[in-house]
Image (spheres, rainbow, N blue to C red):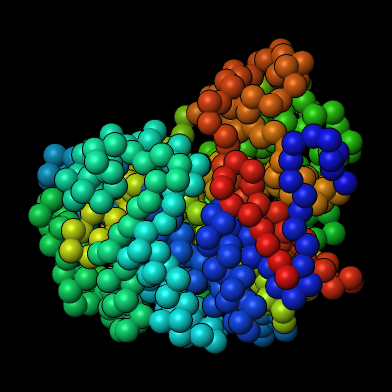
Length: 530
């Protein structure tokens, strides 16, 4: 139990249902759906639509999503289903075609960074197969806020102001996200009527309201006007896929992730390394941070050099998760000295939204939606109000690279939902926002809960660290003596000016019939149960 004389928040408790999101309006929306008899998938979709309105710099209908869904009774193939809702490159997108345009990489504002948005098709697939409420009912709160306006919350205002000049580079986006030529302050009101109309089109026509007709034409016209290779056929062809989740054992639990093209495999590799460290849970904090940093360097190197869309190249998931691989990687780590920093092979990424929901029947969903960079590509389709993501900048223009761009190929993804399972039943949907940090964040959150017995909120409240690109980033709340210890080991420590990531989780206590939720203090959100 936390010290009630210190700042902080208690975990949320509930018995009949719970939602945890990064924004209070989204959490309230999900809880309203649950209290009205909706299921976990219904509540997640309603919350996601709301987040597309109230956190427009982080997510949107023009982005991608992944989900792990654990029906209360399990499935014929195991306790967890995985949905890949990431978008594909246009059919005309090849390394040669982009090289012929004089490109050697794909920039964040380039139209070639925009893969076909996959989120809406994934939402429709989830609703059709596992939902119990229509999209018209589920999207109504988000449509109302988009039309009538909503109050900007503090963390949203902070991020918006920091990246305001970038979004102003596109005239269409500037017209929507500039408030009298300035970024909003907390409490200012904002609306997106064009986005509301697009959400209405989706509720009326399903996926066809987005991937066909006027909305699709607006997106294609915008992209082709910027030099993109997209066609209406590319949008019509977009489909989310049910895929087989991957997993590894940690302590007496199993951790489930979506398979590549996501980076969830890297989180599992990190956990495999840490689970074999002698008495890892009892090590001093500096030792644990050191091991996490060194394991992360190795796992991310594997990610950057081997992970890709498995439909376009083989990814040896079994080999990478083997005991032999974990032992080899663990043996390469010096417990007292930092190894070399490995340059990342991909763009920086910090932004997304994650949410999780558990309903009265015990159905649990772990759900993540993103437009990649803050404000995505900054390219807005003006008639539909769709802010287009830029996930395609993760593609390489080297034909020998596993993540080389190719027709209808999905790029390497950083967004990853997680699900903790014990004895064949889901016990915690969880996720960590923060782009590149996410795989490390999954490992850190799981070790806090399973190694140290922390509740989800306490595990999120701990100071964070992240070894990436030769720098060990550490939040300012770490003990100065601990930082000095890590520097003595050879780590190049940088106190990060921004918090590392954000997270949500709901622990399902089957024995007591209680739900215990946490929501990261680094964001505006909350967990609420009833």
